[in-house]
Length: 180
Image 1: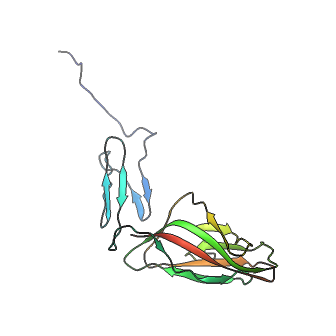
Image 2: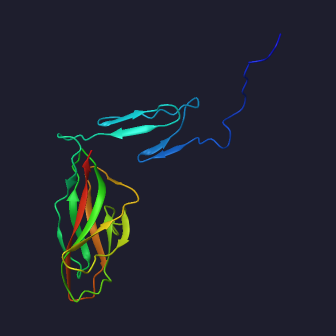
Image 3: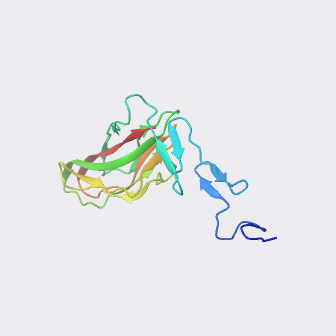
């Protein structure tokens, strides 16, 4: 009897195949070489062929219209932590764009340093260091390499760690994104 076409496999998973997948809330391990990727709420998944697609839709009404978080006027000559916005306990916020808008500057130096995030004491979960521009009535668009998912029930803060050594520098941090 011919053995052609009979596949036999013995042993474990080859060493170049991942056996654990790190997620935001733990580690997923395949069972019988299968890892299920499922959506919940406003998140769905699909896997045509070898591509896994995760689709996030807005949990709020009105579709996925961008939201500009209410801007907070900041004095960049003063060190300290300020809450920029809070996420609800039932939804996250994805930051898709980040603008710095300089409102007024009197002899600014431009040596200010700040960070953004939600974990004390440094609040540098997202942008570890950045600086406010020094030209009044102009803005800079910070190029985002990655979107940021701010978890539910979080106070998102700015931490001015090094104040500008000039006379005056005020401006807004504009955070634009979507509730999910």
